Amino acid sequence: MGAKKSENEDSYLVGSMTPEGAQAASSILLAVADGMGGHGDGRTASAVTVDAVARHLFETLPHGAEPADDDAVTAAIEQAFQNAKVRVEQVAMGEGVSFKMGTTLTLIFVYGGKFYLGHAGDSRGYKLRGREITRLTKDHTVGEQLREQVMGTPAEKLVDARWDNALSNAVGGGCQVLRVESAILDVAAGDRLLLCSDGLSVLDDEIVRSLLEAQTFDGDIPQKLVDAAAEAGSHDDITALVARVG
Image (cartoon, rainbow, N blue to C red; front, side, top):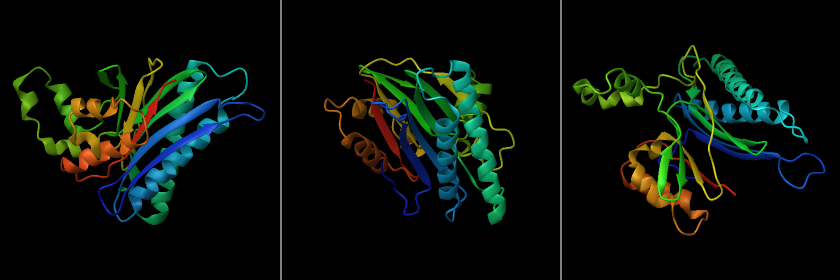
């Protein structure tokens, strides 16, 4: 994990739940949140969000021999996002910045042997299988919305790139309705998963792939991704979490 700006508004979490007497964790949570608001407000929003989400998922789902079913887990992820939104808005109102403070959130929750995705904003999730890289999330930005509306027409190329910096969906930040993008991921042993804030978006997917597929899987991969984005001219906070399945 790394950052370009001196005031980093990203937060990230790698956490697990191990039931009493168990030999291994029953669930694992990976999360990246990119805060907004400035003057420390974005950092507060992202930190509050990852804490609220972790508490809800670890404390409300059963972690014994009988895990919850897919519908229950998906609903729990949705509720965790909504709880985070309420908490961010409460903190924002208390600090007088209610229309500014907010954050993106992208997470992978490993539970009951399955990998669940939750996403809002323009942080990203990727999966590398062999030499094939797949983006797991959509950017929830005004620019992406506009491109989808005119996809396949000449107007698609005319969408101003500045709209890519305007979020259409986020935890707080003035978004009245929070839409949670969720999925159960198709994963296999050996797959590599990446969660990152939008500071990494300056890198082409093929560059991300080449760095993710390093022959030796070690703790250097996230830093190499961060360094590559910084060298490519990223002006945003840059955070990367990388995990290997199996």
